[in-house]
Amino acid sequence: MVIEYVGQVIRQVIADMREQRYEEEGIGSSYLFRIDQDTIIDATKCGNLARFINHSCNPNCYAKIITVESQKKIVIYSRQPISINEEITYDYKFPIEDTKIPCLCGADSCRGSLN
Image (cartoon, rainbow, N blue to C red; front, top):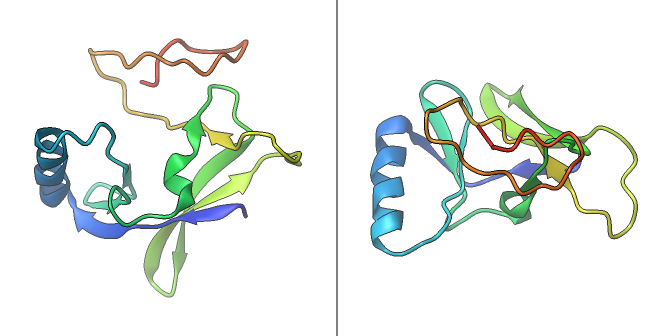
């Protein structure tokens, strides 16, 4: 285990409203991480360092949803030993959509987009 992704646990309807408000406020990035169909963790304003972990198409970590005392949590685990000063990354696995989000991870196996 590397770190838990923490923030406010919210429903989809709240996440949609917050995402729109964040855009209106000029917040360039929102840190919304889906747990399941109805539940999202919003780390935009009250998260930890996990929200700054970048995407890679060839990551050294992965995200896993676990249940602890009937609460779902998102935990980042390492795939391999991570060296000092090595960037921690995982695959965001964004859903496939018509509008592609360009990937800039630089991996040899880069897909070219986050979705």
